[in-house]
Image 1: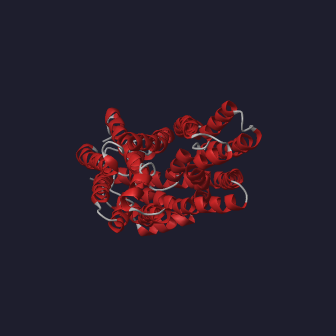
Image 2 (image 1 turned 90 degrees about the horizontal axis):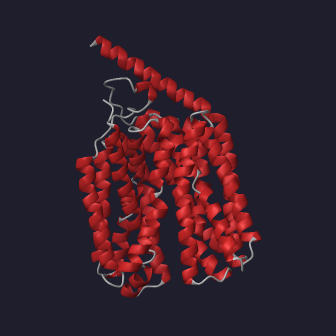
Length: 433
């Protein structure tokens, strides 16, 4: 039985709230860095270990979460992930020493790799032709969560302290765990696929090692995995170094940096939904549609960033803000289309695993990018570091997207044939009973 339209939008609302607050909790440690360092009397290197610990734990656990989501009920596992988020944040809030804080903060990475199951469950509530918009809507939570975390930290750290902020966000995680556990129903895997849409009942499909190994024989999927390593370079370089670039090389004050980045982030956030919607539009007309949107977007991002940082005078802050905002609009276009394409070519019972592999590979790129930018900046400048890494990565990604677009129609046809065979088997089984 297909879920009611109103209920599936309730699920989207719950997951949007989960991702928004989770991202806020994950990213607010940045604005809280100074009071935490003062509390434990630690230096930048020791604080850097706190950041790295959670990133490593999250990266390592991606494959495990992917397997569990494809093997068991995703809705219950997402409730568990939300509870872990709340519990580990509380543990880091009560940590009395630096060493205990280092350990407990590392455990907050456990739930950071829980998103593949969320996207997989959503794919069984929404048919392929509109998934890009839904994923784009959900991915708005990354930039909005960053802003919310920054606001919470700056408003509350001087009144309730950094521990109080963690108590607050941890409590929200536990509350959402209850909402997800009792409010979100598991959907049969493949329920929203067109080939299976008219069936009253469909079989139960779970993780299969043979099918999982077959993921690495899909040429389009392997190419997406490879581009994922490079695709996160620009985002992480901009996240970690653009504030510093504005202050050190363009002479911005803290207030000017805040206005510039908030404006750019708001425009960037809209790019997730617009990119997903455009991907859906062109996908309904041709199987390469999503990848066409991704290819054009990364090329435009490279060109616009090059013009923004090189051609706009330091003194012309108004033009710089306009150009930076236009650039920011295109940066996230590829993201919802990559997720949608992965689900366009993989069977429902291994979709969490496929996306977990994608995110695991991306995590490696995410860890390397800030360091590489720092090394280049020492020898040249931050502007050169940002341009060299971002433009090079986007050009590489455009090539990978072009090659992926060449192979993807065949992989889409293969999936549709597999689902059609399943539908016929289900009908035969129903007729036999």
